[in-house]
Image (cartoon, rainbow, N blue to C red):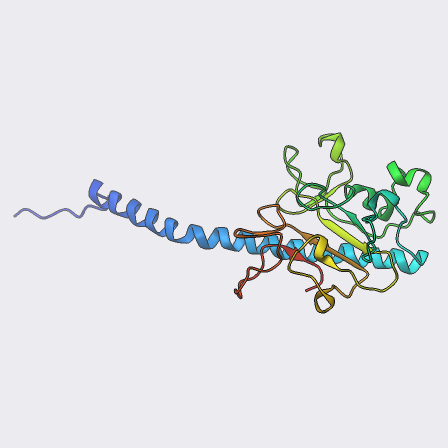
Length: 231
């Protein structure tokens, strides 16, 4: 009498079926994984830019003013919106790169802060980790010889663009952000803070797809593309 043998190995058809199922599951999970990573980046950017705003306010407490960097000031004719802006000069519409401000806040004698002219106490008001990716510095300070010298001292967001920081200079403790976001205009929409900041998000541009230069997508309850410190 012959007995049947049990085969423990996969047949070729079974193996193909298993690989197909795994591939389908991975394809279904990838959007959720990507979404989770993007959400983590946004959270990290939100924490960083709030830390920056608080560091600027701490400097103000110590020196009774923000660093008086002339090149960073809004000098538009007949303006009633006094502010300084540090960050991306192209897409972010800022006056000077943000390393000008951070050299001051970090107590680094360099550039505008040579000999610690704007931070005589050499107080370190902010500390963030070092940027990653020497080809596209992101998520931290551009510190070290492995990075482009032109970007030294800049604070980059998780997507590789400079954080933008706006400091009011006219003493009214509010900033009209209409020079940056065209939908933030009028008395009811000014930002009532002395120091604010924003990251331009994944697209590294103010606003999002189909609503460039605006903080919020018109007629939508979606979260805005940019990460801001005042919300």
